[in-house]
Image 1 (cartoon, rainbow over the protein chains, first blue to last red):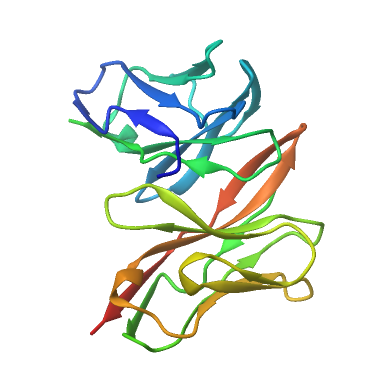
Image 2: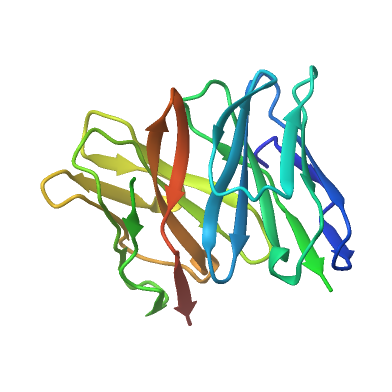
Length: 112
Length: 115
């Protein structure tokens, strides 16, 4: 158990819908990262927050957004969902920006 | 931008045999390197990491990896595998960008240990 929690574990929704994925980092970790794992693209970095502020952006679509709250938990919002958004979404946390990242169990999203 | 190549997408081995999972990265500058393991239907677990110092890094579950700067490689090895090592293994390199570090992953290697 890495100490990073993600909810929900599974999510099934329809195209065009909007979902929110939640992540609670390890106690004391200030940095949160979001990754997407799909069969065709593999594991890709989406976005990073550090102590409430956006720090880095990767291959994140404009339909996707994220935020980190004062209690340091983070949410990833996915809107106007398409079939191709079906994937496993991981959250990771680290104490600071350049330290080892510890991954949560992931949220499996299925868009029908 | 960094890239990571895992040369084998699938590696089948017999129990108690040695295994090497290969990983090459693109950068010639200082990097941090990681191996993560993903068991079926689970998240990613850190196996080991190279930040600096000794080029031979020991991790959990009897795995080790050797950092080779001249060959830009970070191959993962285990002298004797168990059925329970069946999983997907990901090599990753950290990439600094604008004061932040993100991980760039390889495509993964599926290790199947057969009895």
